[in-house]
Image 1 (tube, rainbow, N blue to C red):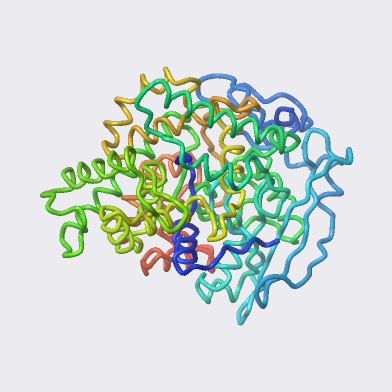
Image 2 (image 1 turned 45 degrees about the vertical axis):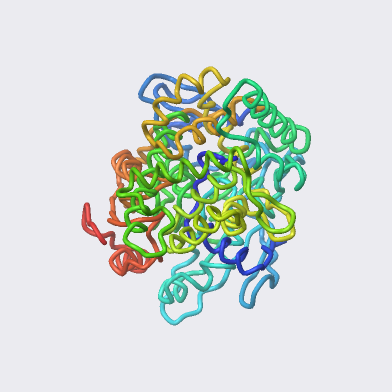
Amino acid sequence: MDSSRLLRTSGAVIATAALLISGCALEDPGPSASAAARPQAQGDGRAWGDLPAAGAIGAGGSLAGPASTLAPLPRALPSALRPYYAQKLAWHACGAAGFECATLTAPLDYDRPRTGDDIKLAVSRKKATGPGEHLGSLMVNPGGPGGSAINYLQQYAGAGYPAAVRARYDLVGMDPRGVAASEPITCLSDAEMDAYTQVDQTPDDATEIAELVEAYQKFADGCASRSGRLLPHVSTVDAARDMDVLRAVLGDEKLTYVGASYGTFLGATYAGLFPSRVGRVVLDGALDPSLDSERINRDQTAGFQTAFTAFAQDCLKRKDCPLTPAANAAAAGDRLAALFKQLDAHPVQAGKTRKLTESLATTGVISAMYDEAAWGLLRKALGAAEHGDGALLLRLSDAYYERDGKGSYTNLMFANAAVNCLDLPPAFHDPNEVREALPEFRKASPVFGASLAWSSLTCGYWSVPATGRPHRIPARGAAPILVVGTTRDPATPYPWARSLASQLSSGRLLTYDGDGHTAYTRGSKCIDSAINNYLLTNTPPPAAQKCS
């Protein structure tokens, strides 16, 4: 079962796939949103607990007109929050050589700080290696929502970011509230999660629809019963406010940040709430905050179709392409759809104890769309599946879900649903609404449309009402913000980057004409040079620069 709106950097997905396929297990490191979080016009003199000005959207999700925008919080820090901003972190060595870890304390509910009900947030850093002037902290987030920033830092960014950037910045990752090492949300056992991922996500009759609805209800009920305390307090606004506490505790006057995928929404939200504290901010693989859930899911469905078309066109040029003798990408899509239908009726063996179902196969293909470097592996996986061996395609699916070789899941999918279902109202509330939308989803993707339409029903059974709404983020007064978009990005379609760059009053669009999800540190010297120069010299690239 796919979880729509799962937005994370390609490196996080494909690195996981490499670990799984090599047989290695993943290593884990260790009531409504508050009225106080409802943003006001900056410097308007009101307390943080006042209602938002007309035309603004607050963290509680209250709308005040059709042209809603995320308005900034006042600059003055409320006295009740000062102890959080003044805390000292106790760093200790952790993970691989050179990394340190600490715990940040934040109020669970920003409307009720210092009540004793706080949340503990895990933080890690790798200090600047030198030489050169120290430029402060560079926070990173790989997306999700639900992706572990600490894992991303320690397994990728800490050594994979350009040496010049690592020399000048302390690289910092904080697992957002409810994620990984920061009081993780839990919903299902590993065995229950295995069953959940195998439920038929393209139901053919009333019985299969009922089974799918039951799975969504069980998932939502499990989250409510096991993590009910956290569920109302894991919005993106809450996480952005946590970032500002960490910024201050690290001693940085302004935030320097690289956010990928969903991390762009987190970074843009920070900029909207705290525009005067924006430093050098890179938003790579951008999400458009002005879209509702149905539009996001439908656009993403089209994005995965675009990515599959690029894969198929490349595949058909190769001798090992399992989609031949298809004459074109459309025919290749028909062949893949036929494989999915065959697996729906007759799952194939995938190792000694597991089978590859249609839902798991679909997820495996989607996983490989995140990075063209995985296309060769996908060709092998599809060829093997056609001959009755589903092991490789299953491992790609496991990588997407962050399931290790021992059958243990991270809490990625639990946090993903919790944040998404709080940030926006459901795309659909019941199966009838899905049925009505199926033609548009199938039009967006003949291959993935039905699956992604039904997976968009997840939040329809959530126990906590959404507190956010679609909104624009102008972040007026912020320093230049670099928005990066990839033309054939499957998970965050390129028009989203153009939209976010146009919403931000200081947005600067950088375009990568290429495949895969996100662009930084993925092989384009042009992209990397532009972003590195911005981070190191505070000089954004020329307006509308394009790279390939």
